[in-house]
Length: 220
Image 1 (cartoon, one colour):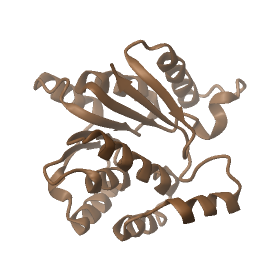
Image 2 (cartoon, helix red, strand yellow):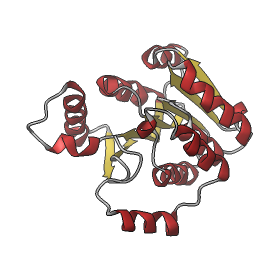
Image 3 (cartoon, one colour):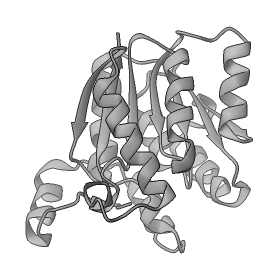
Image 4 (cartoon, one colour):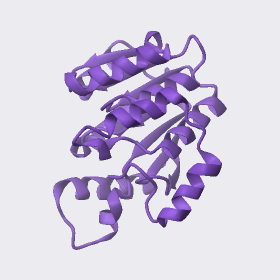
């Protein structure tokens, strides 16, 4: 995992940020707060957040999923890009990190857009499917436990409407997926999902080498 784009020399990465990233002050403050957390590397890079916000605005998205909240940066950057009546259903199990998220959502004035579901994400997704919310979401972002990535993808594919977009984080996994000698469970799960997506006729695919690798799957 990485909280900045892989493979760029530090001076080039700094230049990219200087001429590209337009980060709202509240997002910057959230990143600074998250840096104090021992797992701060789990937070998405600001350039990735900005890219996701651009996609959401291009699509005219109103209803989105955030699968894996951590301290709330991905939900916040999307919420800021949504219209006033936009909605995010955010899935996580960690009460402590999501308290940080809620604090900054409130500070940004977007908490009314975000419905936090503190439960295993698969349970929340199954509930949404049971409620008949299939084909109603415009956008879904998957950034939770890697062992369930394929399951999250399949549930999101049910919930996202045709023409909707699923974004999947960490698909380059710090370069481990390209090293055949690395065979731990999480690496294998991501590697297998990448292969599956490459052959999946249900989507239009692009893997973007931003941050730790972001797959974009447009549902046909």
